[in-house]
Structures are given as C-alpha cells and as structure tokens.
Image (cartoon, rainbow, N blue to C red; front, side, top):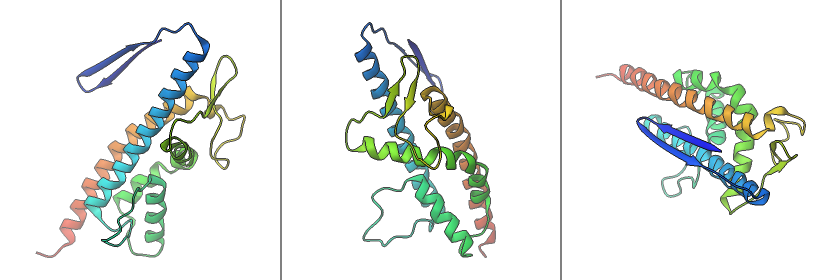
Length: 186
C-alpha cells in the first residue's frame, strides 16, 4: 500500500509492504487508533480556540478548568445556552447547525473510540477477510449492518467533514467576533 499525505507544500510518502496477515491487521489497527486520536485532538483544539475567542460556552470555575472538552460536550453546552437565551443564534451556531447531521452520526462514535484508545492500545476493528469494519460504535448512530462502519467510508467521511467544518468554523468565529466588536459601545 502506498500512502501520500499532503499538508500545504509538505508531502509525506509511506510505502507499506507486508506479507503477514497478523502484522498487516496490526498496522491497520494502529493507524486507525492514531487517526481517531488525532481527530479527537483536532476537535478539542477547535473547542479551545472557540472558548479563547468567544468565551462562556463551557462554564467552569477559574480554579478547576475542564480537563478535556470534547466537541460533543461543547455542542451540547452551546445548544443549552441558546435555548436558555444566554447566547444568540449567531454565526457560530449557524455553522454548527450546518454540520449537525455529521455530528449526530459520527461524533459519539469518535468520542467512544477516543475514550477506548486514550487509556492504551485497543482493537476496535473486525475484518471479514476483505473489509475492515468498526466493531465498537455509538448504538444510536449505527447498526451492525451500516455500510458507514466500513473503515474506508467512515474515515473518508470524517476527513471531508472535518476539513469543511474547520473552514466554516474559522469563518464563523471571525464573523462572530466582528459582530460583537461592533455591538460594544466605544
């Protein structure tokens, strides 16, 4: 298998050549774990960025900031604050609403896998000899026969939606901060 990862002008090229089924499966399991942990980390950084810029979505005391703020918690807190009237339906909320179908289908499974992986190496994939499927997933988002549980479909959906979400999130933060700056009297 040849893999090329592009990041701006940088290019990483990996070649995997394996003649042992068990080692090949180990490579798949390990790289899937890295992918999920990286994705969860990106989402936690998105939450931290949003909190630094906009403040007051995740409420905590100064003495005890949250250890970790998964994106799912952030979205739930934001929804509660909007429903209570503490936050307006601003650009940030409209951005998140656009990606709600993706979040509803994938975020719980990403968090579940992250929590399983964070405490050490864990196998969450099964193979039928041809395909790799995720064996541990959010029961309310998928069924055992869901084609979205195939690792190639699942990871591609995460990559595409994460890329688009981060672009939209950055734009929403920029527009939201401009809106709040205009509303503050000089």
